[in-house]
Length: 112
Image (cartoon, rainbow, N blue to C red; front, top):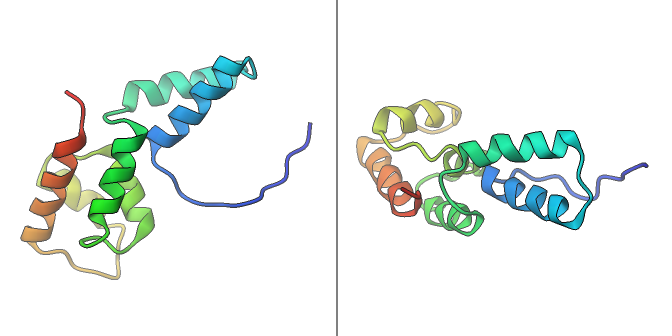
C-alpha cells in the first residue's frame, strides 16, 4: 500500500489519538497503530476539542504555532514546565505574566 502526503501540519497529541481511535474502530488497525494509541491515551490530559481550544486561546500570547502545539499536547501545569517549552521559541522572550496566563489557559482544559 502506498501513500501520498497531501498536507503537512503540526497537531496536538489529542488530535492524533482521536484519529488513531477512529482507525482502530473501523478495523484498519495494526499493532503499531494500537501501541501508538495506547501511548497517546496514557499521555492525554485533554480532549481533541479542548486541545484545539487551548491552541486558539494561546494565539494572543504565543505566536509560534509549533510551540502552541507542544503546549496543548503536553499541557504543562507549572510555570517552570511552561518556560521549558517556551524555550523552543528562540525569537521571543515571555514575561512572567505571559507564563502565568498560559498556565491559566491550560488549567481550564485539562481533565482531572
